[in-house]
Amino acid sequence: MPHKLETLATLADAIAKRRAENSDQSYTAKLLSQGLEKCAKKFGEEAVELALAAMGQDKAHVTAEAADVLYHFLVLLEAANVPLSAVMDELKAREGVSGIAEKAARGKTS
Image (cartoon, rainbow, N blue to C red; front, side, top):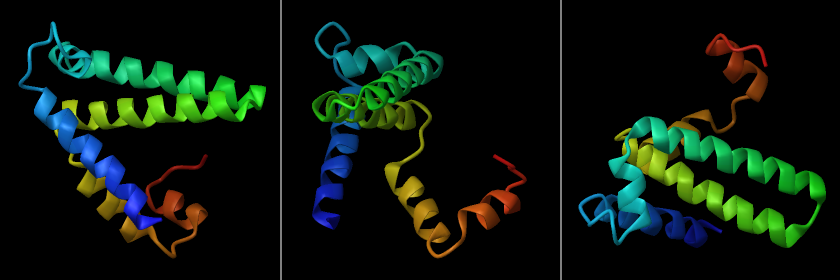
C-alpha cells in the first residue's frame, strides 16, 4: 500500500504549486487565497459530509466524500504551512504506541 500514499504526496505537491496560480482559474488557488480560516472551514464542512455519507452506508458516496476530505486536508495543511511529511513523521512517531497512552501524554481524554 505505500505506493498509494505517493498519490497523497503528489497531490500535496500539486496543491503547493497551485498557490501561485490565478485564483480565477484554479479552485485550489482560490481557496488558498481566501486564507487559513476559509480552508479550515471548508475542511470541516467536508468532514461532516463524510460522516453523514458513512452513516448512509453507500460505499461510492463515502469514497467520494473521503477523497474530498483528503483533498481539503491537504489544502488546509498548505494554508497552515505544514508539510505532509511532518504529519507522516508524527504518525510514524506514534507507531506502536497505544492510542489511549498517546492521548494521555498529550493531556487529551477523548
